[in-house]
Image (cartoon, rainbow, N blue to C red; front, side, top):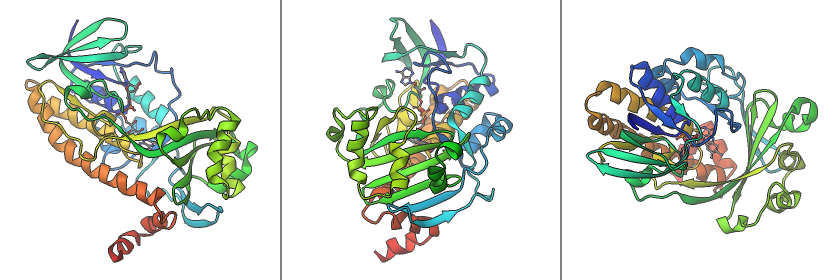
Length: 380
Ligand SMILES: Cc1cc2nc3c(=O)[nH]c(=O)nc-3n(C[C@H](O)[C@H](O)[C@H](O)COP(=O)(O)OP(=O)(O)OC[C@H]3O[C@@H](n4cnc5c(N)ncnc54)[C@H](O)[C@@H]3O)c2cc1C
């Protein structure tokens, strides 16, 4: 089987790429490991930034569809200390420029915008090989393989395409998030709903945090951050109350209104160890292959990864549309834009980890939002 443009992964980066190509009359095929669009709940609410995510959706011709899925009110922000004392509050007055959407809704409008058959579901890539002259072979778990003229790794943190361009592997950041949910919170968990407010809430102490997003449909989506080496979590089962109790030992002196966001969970909790590629991860241009999104620049979450994946997809799609007969020129042009952008975002992500988990939390985050952060940093 031969296809000209093969994208691995139907995350936001791969989908925007395929959509921008389609808008320009260029066909591509996405190979996605998940068995169907509905196979996994796409949790989480994302703020979509004016300077990257929204630009990408405009390039994809989906601004109206995007506006239709915005969850209003989601830009409100609170910062608390571990005793649930309010240190900073920002209301959503509609002027923030970072409207919030559910990741599942965003993925759905992208999937629906592609011609039927663009995505091969249940197609898990297990290996990729260079055939020379810029051609590549992709080996699938079912034993079949695909040869392609341009191969794009949009397959996230543990990319099977990345080894074709780079030896880099994600390293553990030192932080693991414990993810929990509360549903129907106005009726079932009014105290939790009250402490969180209408948007995001960060409760911080050095080396610990509980951060929560109020999502559409009265859902609280919580991450408790535990700064411990990976082996601390070995054998820890957070689906078991005893496992959650172990996690909560680190939050022993926290306000019950905050710890209840974890202990009262009403959906199966999950452990999310956070990894990152080296800041400024780059590679020498390789003919016929490149990466977008987390595959290229995985970094600890700082609210921009999904936006970066989308702008990567849009930029690569536009570069291919501008150089349809010279895919290597398109890749080189895309990478020249993507590398410095990713480096800057990875620097920002590292800075955000310090604000969230460093010795000066929560004051450090308050200063970030009140604009005193730069002055305090300059004063040392
Ligand atoms: C806890 C947490 C919170 C976050 N919060 C935010 C936020 O608020 N805002 C924000 O902008 N970003 C956030 N991010 C970052 C964001 O989720 C990622 O940066 C973004 O999803 C990257 O998109 P992607 O398309 O590159 O990769 P992914 O979303 O990882 O998509 C990759 C796709 O490839 C598929 N795939 C993987 N391997 C294979 C294979 N071998 N064969 C075939 N298919 C494969 C996967 O199934 C998946 O569909 C957060 C990340 C985490 C961990």
